[in-house]
Image 1: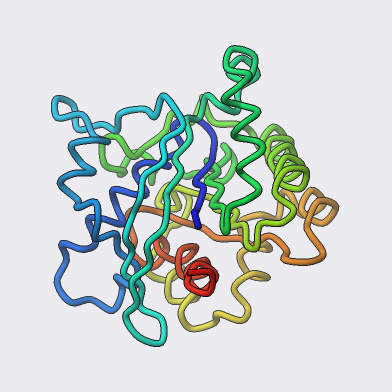
Image 2 (image 1 turned 90 degrees about the vertical axis):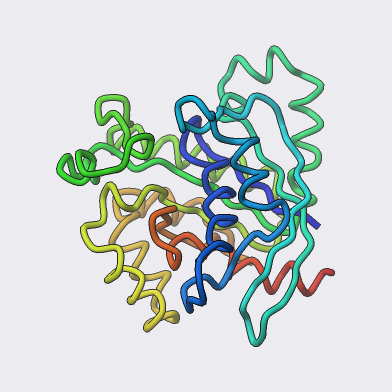
Length: 255
């Protein structure tokens, strides 16, 4: 049983794991419904974050990491799973050519997982320069290096085609527009919408944040087990844990 976290280069895949582990250090909170308890935050921090700069160390190879999650569903439950972290470079054209055996093995195995979380960076037109200026060091992005909306649409379509070709049997795939603190003015309000209106979440998120790719999603979505859409951020526990709460019952069922 495993969850694959994939996404473009430097989008924040490893930082998501560290943030989930950091939630365990908080006091009692209704917001920390998913936490990583093993490895501990300190172990992950030493492994994933540079002690000199405080920035995340780029993932250079496919890394399988056993993790233990505590999840609050009907009650507090323990889930033992496998986090498979991937370097962003794996999706560049050069990486498969330079690592053909690893690439073929990865493609063969990715479709055997229970869940997939795809993290996407925001596109130029959706981000706010003011919010980017206020972001903490290491959490902002260079707006000039972000894809514009049209390129972002093409990138999303390439991702969805890859998932349809290689992951048709995966029970649930979460498509996450990550770093919401760079394009969402009020994270608390967005989180409240998720909590108070869970039934309408998919329609609202697609209409509000993925509207530029409506046609891309419509022609590539799966009829059975359709893609699930989220906005995520390590800066807010509700947004951080939302895709994991969605995946957790599936992982529990297959224990």
